Length: 530
Image (cartoon, rainbow, N blue to C red; front, side, top):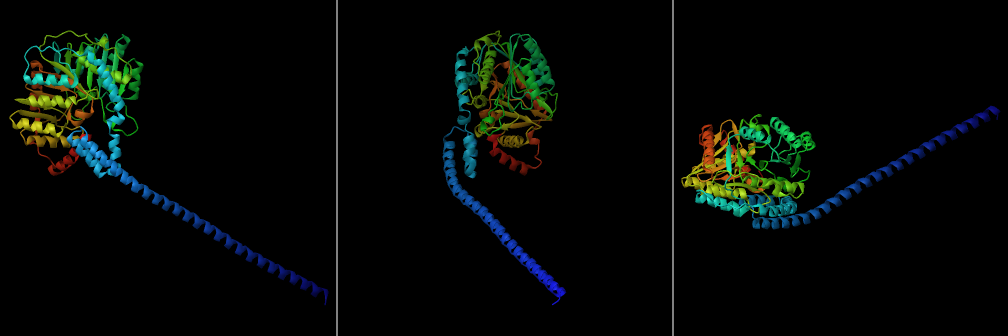
């Protein structure tokens, strides 16, 4: 065999071996990849199965926990219902809570617990009572002089017995028929202050009125006058932080009642709705007005703003001073020497009873409701009411209906322009219900009525409290009661002029009566929360 043949054979053998080797390698690689993919697939399936198992386990644990939670919540809701029945809550409020507890029993008891003042406001209420007890020794002696009706005597006795609220002789009251008249008088007297200025309002807002007020207050601080201001944390939420800082930097002692806090509690529903200005212990103001431009009609939010105020002089000023100082002491946590600010007024020539009243968590009884009920009950000829909101309890509704049916001239003046539409639905519905018994209801044309007045032939109350459940039960309120004939005549003239500017609700047709009635009925059920 030739060398060429042998060489060719060896080359062919090597080529064949190389081909076989390459083929074997490819086969091994394919088998290895298939085995790796199978492992990944099994791992993926295992993880999915594990997740499903975890989800199912958690779900069944949830079902088991839910079962026991539902049983527990049902038991707690039933116990809460019994607690509602045994409580001193007003009937409509009880009905609302029972509805919440029954329909939403899984969370209703939680909401109910969060609403309990004794839990979330109990310690504060106890501190109020301690402050109130310490201030009781400054109560005035009332020696009845002049002529008083049996009804006004009954009113005065109620205020003394229910809240130790003093009736004063030798004190005068002056009716201020609008917000602009009120604040013009306030600003003029502030300029003459020499000792102290106490101011307390639910709403304090930036604007023209606040700018005028600030300029006077800052000047008075520089003159050494003690200037203090209490505002409500929610009512005055629109007051800018810049203004608040400016007030403090200029020496105004600012306190904020019940600040808005970022957690849910019904204690936020307790508001300082009072309106108070005290100057040197000589002059005190109250009424319906807050410290904002709409109250002097510098800003028209809901048409003309109808409001009023009262100037008090004489020994009765001390009662307003005490009301302010108790609230200030509660907020500042600094004990006050009340005697420094009392007994500074000059007696007036008056035989009428003047009772500056207040209501809030420092009193054990609901003063506003009791006072209004007493005035309404005593009315034999006339009962005139002015209020922005007519959301009374059933007891007040029945009393108004009975008065009208017995021949008393019962009239109620309401806003022609609402500020809160949902409350207005209930207000108009309640008014129409009262009209069926002979109560006359009026809507002041193109105006928002913010005055809070209850007038009979015997006496009158002017102040901060509306005819609604919030003023009756939840808010700190104040005002003045009197049987002063000249003051009552001025209030009566204001009513008569307002009647002439108003439309009888009986002549006004509802645009969508059925829809309005349905909405009003729905909202009325929730009126304790309004």
